[in-house]
Length: 103
Image (cartoon, rainbow, N blue to C red; front, side, top):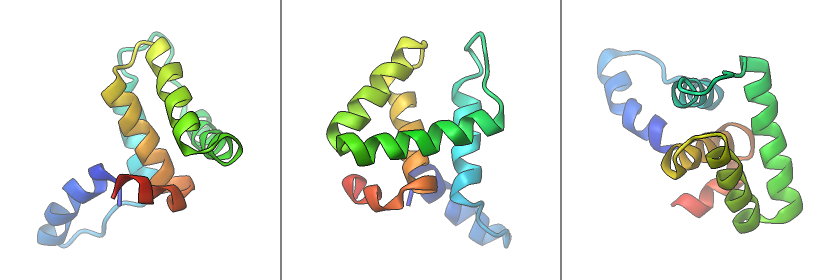
């Protein structure tokens, strides 16, 4: 489970709301994290980025793929923490088998 979803789940359970999908959490994290960028990607581009990231992890392996992903997002102006949050959310949404690296 992603860190963001884990933080939201108790609130959602108390209010009787259904938890958001992993993809909705991913989109929210990316949108919140990229507000300071000059060009904010649209939701379709964000989804494609997440799927491409998972394909890259499959091709390069988790450690190299995650490191490259964080480096690329930092080059756009995001902090390592925000880039890591985006990577974890993309994994939860599009390639949950890699979630085991965060447990």
